[in-house]
Length: 62
Image (cartoon, rainbow, N blue to C red; front, side):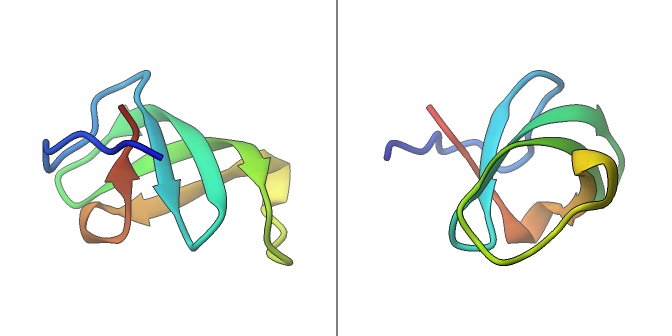
């Protein structure tokens, strides 16, 4: 899996977090992003397939 070196994601970027969850950024805030989950390889469940992720807790996929 390849990651970009940028720190903050932008709208439309694919991000990886929680050791197996991939999502598309829908909105960017100062400290976090709202993400639509596209792939979930964990036991975690996300209401309406969306979640908020802090900038320090994800990596942007290349």
